[in-house]
Image 1 (tube, helix red, strand yellow):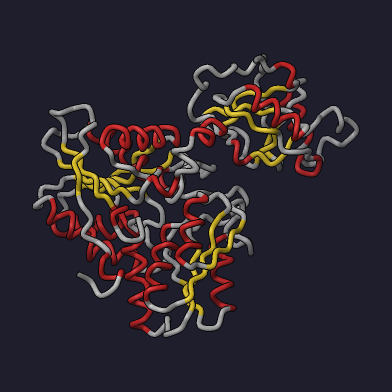
Image 2: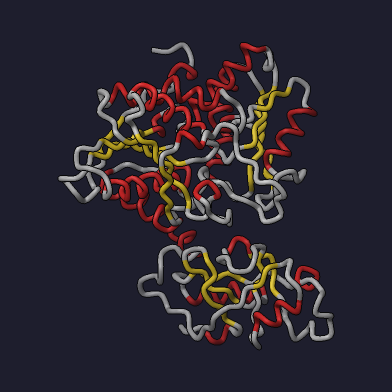
Length: 445
């Protein structure tokens, strides 16, 4: 029995993954952090940050906790803050799942939603806005999970020792996603110290994340990786992330992570979110490389219940092209390759790229990178800009954002969307642009 919910955090179970497909291979164990009272691994950091701020006097009775979050840290802070008598304000990007937003409001948090497409330093960027709100609020305290040393310390003091005790010192590999870096840093530092550096620490990362050397383009898995807005002047990494702790980074595609999370739910009854899918997919790749005697522990940060409107929602999957053509659905008809052009290029560049094609989805990345559907900022009709000078910027001649059509969506739904938006169609496969349809009459079915 505990006196408060704060004391109930931690001591989460470690469950063997049965569906790895190789009974003679390494043992893979999943640390089910969604068994924490707030539903995620972030409860640990939230508790440590609040207790540390109380001890130093930064957070005083009746004060206000403020945090920029993708959801889970905000949920942990709200749960703990409510139990300890604090007001809580959470700032979240607009791509956060509706499930997390509903939970935050249910717990009593004040939810501020801001655009996810803002570079570091922009007044509307999540962390910048949270910092300003904390400064302008009487009694405000910014938790600042990205740079707060209490974040990794929470895992050095709890998560690491739990894994060592639960495996009786047999653990050989730790696999965890890298978001703020606190979980993998603190847990990894403890396991390395107690094992005389024997335990190897593996970071699981979205393929485009900057942590593993990607270009930082948008990805669809929440709470993991490092996104880099193309207008960011300086790529600032969290102080909670100690890169020297990581022995290897394994990259995972969005679709692979989603498929893994859904498959494990169906085969093992372990219902994890997308970041857990990233970690398990990386662990399966690792298992193919290491000895059969290895014991791999995987951090499962949160539950699939936080993503019922996303990764476990058939309509969402179809919209972003993650599930392929739907069974029995009319296929999209005549299509052609799209032409993508960065928004900061010139009309001369666009004309060269287009080579006569009238379809130009305009995106925010530099030339040569994958055009991700979430980063399309408009379209351009080169015929209408014929009289404009070649050195004029594409962004100054933008038309409407094209309607998106997931490759697995029924043709009737796609036609209706294009008609209502009076827009050309851009076809999305695995969240990336694959082709374009200039005339909705070309859609079969």
